[in-house]
Length: 257
Ligand code: ADE
Image: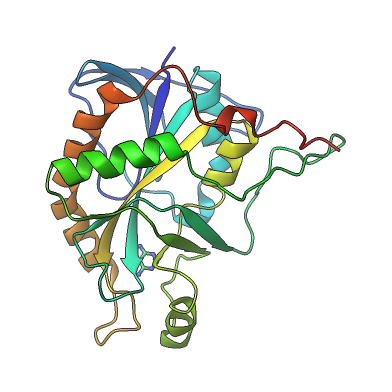
């Protein structure tokens, strides 16, 4: 039983030198790939590559419900999402790390919930990220002298295309970073009362700035950011307590209609 789950994004596929691979089935179908269970700095984790090990699943086709359900099934109570994002502001630079504390959903056609009836739940999403893990990742990055921001609103677009310049300029009015994979992962984790935090790596300035973003640039910078994310995980994982003192485990209280 792994207590911590890591969902890897573009770029990070080989987190552990040795692992046991498990094939998990869920009521929602198969997760993106086999789930690897192994140790990172002495801590057991379950690792799942969001886009599949060979990066064959685009953001709008990821089976987010199966991914979250499968990790939960393995005993995971805390999920760390790794994401490549664009920046919507000058002072959040490519190469920086952001620990988002809010999000906006601009997706259009994804399965967003486990609660499709007959039981109806309305979960509070006021504070969607785990405050304990957010603080730990921020402090760890700071101690490692990695450029990091401890707040940020992440807007999730449907993709797979990037934004138009007009869209990007609009998003700049109300968000700090932009990506394609936070929603519905974050909400689904909340629906199972799991802790969920994100370590986001900035790869580009989206298209509000002069030069429009392209996919190859994102992958190149992502590879350069890889070491920073690994260093944060290596140092932070042993400090993630088993005892959850945050309110994440109480998310379903008072949510049932
Ligand atoms: N992922 C990385 N950079 C991005 C951008 N500019 N827009 C959407 N998703 C991204």
